[in-house]
Image (cartoon, rainbow, N blue to C red; front, side, top):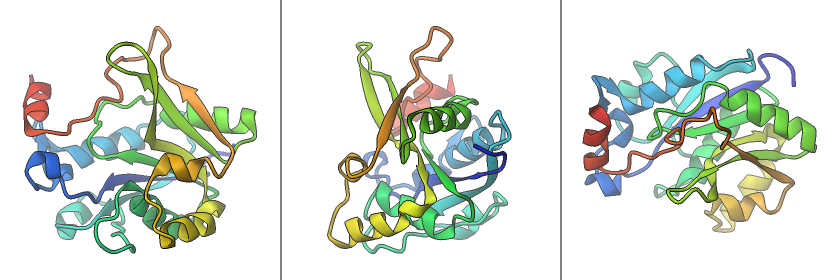
Length: 205
């Protein structure tokens, strides 16, 4: 995969239901909004593969725009979930590949793009999706962390227009490789989600 061939999008378009309806991406972690933590992790990715970054958000757009990258709201109506963010990113993507990350996992690896790109290339697949250890050590897919070919936009449009909303159900329509992040050097908390205000407070320490 060539340098600067990936556009990355931070998914911050949800309702924050488990946080009481607040805009999750703007909640501060050590003084910095969660979505900005994710954006900075993307901008620091190893390998030189990222061309640019986007933020998918549906509320408080000026606040997200202040982060200095384009903001792309959902084009699907009704807060349709992460796949709506995938689609919004694909519609603004100017590179052959799109990388998606959520706004609520501020510790994802700095070699995320590099490892997903290598796996996608080696497998000749359409998508590369993270698989990370659960609390009991079992590997579990993390579908919001996905690298995919940008030319899958038409497929995703058809799937969502038909009412589909599940990332993994859509990914099964294409060649998808699961990429394990369970090496001894991997942070076991790298893909932990900050889904509640209590979890956010715990991470502050």
